[in-house]
Image 1: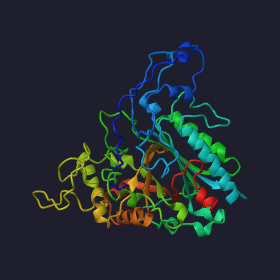
Image 2 (image 1 turned 90 degrees about the vertical axis):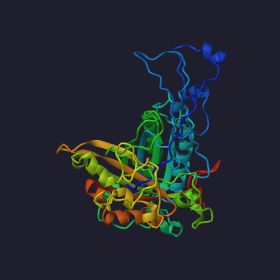
Image 3 (image 1 turned 90 degrees about the horizontal axis):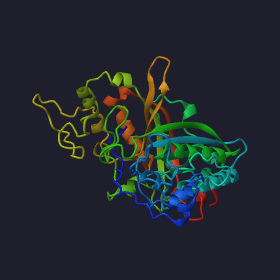
Amino acid sequence: MPDQSLPQARTPEPATAEPATAESEAASAHEGISRRRLLGTAGATGLVLGTAGAAVGYAAAPSEAATPLTALGADRAMFHGKHQPGITDGLQARGHLVAFDLAAGAGRKEAAALLRRWSDTARRLMAGEPSGHDDTDVARDAGPSSLTITFGFGYSFFARTGLEKQRPTALDPLPEFSSDHLDKNRSNGDLWVQIGANDALVAFHALRAIQKDAGRAARVRWQMNGFNRSPGATSHPMTARNLMGQIDGTRNPKPSEADFDQRVFVPEKAQPAWMANGSYAVVRRIRMLLDDWEQLSVKAQEDVIGRRKSDGAALSGGTETTTMDLEKTDAKGNLVIPINAHARITRPDQNGGAAMLRRPFSFHDGIDSDGVPDAGLLFICWQADPLRGFVPVQRKLDRGDALSQFIRHESSGLFAVPGGAAEGEYVGQKLLEG
């Protein structure tokens, strides 16, 4: 879990409702209120990343009067754009990751039709509209809630569709690492979909629609569910905490940095051409051995990470964003930040500049029969080239990260995520119709 911080959500201006129309005032209190109608009464539109507003609560039954959406429900990410959504957007409260394998006999034609269906569904749902066909109405009362749906292709997809010559070399399988305990049934896949939203029902609604759209063209290979802290749960925007209680991801590259696009996105003139403005996602299910971790003292936990648990500041002093002093020693001459501290090992300047944009979800899948929580991190990182991002950092961690004895990598996937779809296009069209 490299020590790099996600772009933090900015605090929104309060959402203001437009004046009620005569039609809405005259509507029956018992009349159904569609998602589109609710959206029309909300004053917040456009792309807002991970923002939150004051939630409306009820002591007993909900009010029958039409109430404008709060900022959390009205926030909307855009489907069409230079890059796919769900990469630079702020962390969402709920997430689903799902991989599909093409069905026997399905090839390039069926894959193109599937991506066309998926893209249309994603566009509709991200706008707060019904999926367009056989909608389940699960999310009919909600706004977009920052929903993002992102699509990627696995290594095996290209042989299944006869497109081997278009497979990027950057998509070659990841090397084996000593910390891997991988379940092949929960790894890789022909197609990958990432879903995130700030409302659990909106996220589930999107997952169900994507699954139904797959029809007979593809079947689910594996699926994982995750969560993060809800927007607005803290008094001010801050770096997320993981299930170990640590502030996780302080040194993530930020869009404001000059080399951000170079690190995260494939250049426009890259080969193959269909990957222009795309990115590569490494997905790892990392189980945290919480019973062992929680037996450590806070001081011991901080030495493992190299940062204070309370505020994420480096053990060398300052605040969370203060540059880490790797040479600082204590009165006995010992390094203040241990030589095998996770934060020391994962620094870009300790890995030839290697960096990646981390955008994870935590997970908890119940308690094992021996009483151990099956919990940890759905690690997702984005980079222009995994061989210059994830791989060198993970190799370094493999050689002596103090955190490694408290985590276990249980599944893995690498996916080529093409650039965003323009108006009238679907994701992957340049590959499948090029």
